[in-house]
Length: 218
Image (cartoon, rainbow, N blue to C red; front, side, top):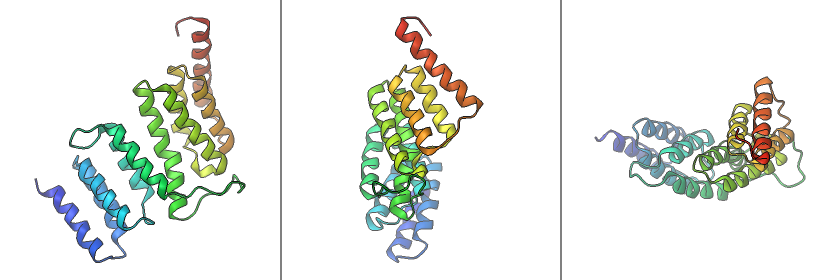
């Protein structure tokens, strides 16, 4: 099937010409390759694009690629978690968090800052959930703590409420006190008010932990 390779070749022709539309081509072709189940080519394209244009990374498209890589790995059957962590490290080296002491209300602006907010608000939460799924609770807790610290620096770095509900729910299932309270810290730093569903999720998570401490079965 030549279709995926043709998509990659289209990007190459635009990138070589250093066309202003190269970012649009990157975003469109990554998503097209993911639809074709060619995560390997999408990752190759991502590495090619960020290598040549390090200050020009579409955070939304990159988050979609990261999530797909984390869950499924590449078409070559390699471990998605290891590849996603490698990708995350590369992204963090290119991202720019706000300086310590800036207003917590501030929303990062610019490519690096926007990417930093996307890493914290989207990619790290996805990583924490995958770690919980694999039973790596302590690493998941440390990952959520990183999100809490980032949300203290800028509200834009916090995940949305629906994501926080999932994180809190899964931390409760894992009976992770530290993880549950880290989720609460994120909400406090980012001034995210809980809705009725979130309140119930919080109660359920805390009840699971109390029963676990007492030796009961939740």
